[in-house]
Length: 61
Image 1: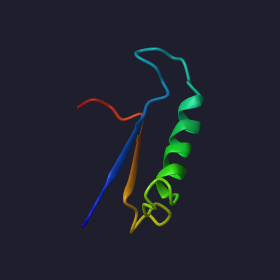
Image 2: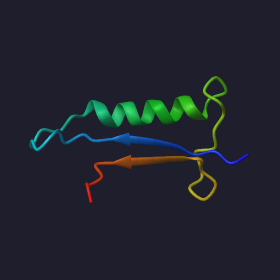
Image 3: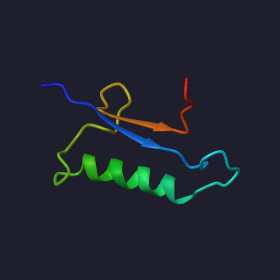
Image 4: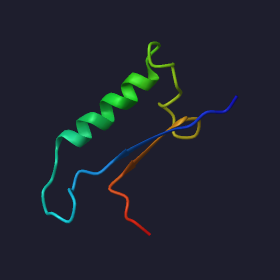
């Protein structure tokens, strides 16, 4: 079975020049949880075999 986790974070706010530093911390914590045994032991350390993708500050198309 192939699985993929996508974690999305935006630390710029809605049309505001504010930097939300807690978002970086949250993204790190979510990834650490998913790679732990309790979180499902997802592969997330090596980019080529990672099942976890983090999207940060993506722009709307």
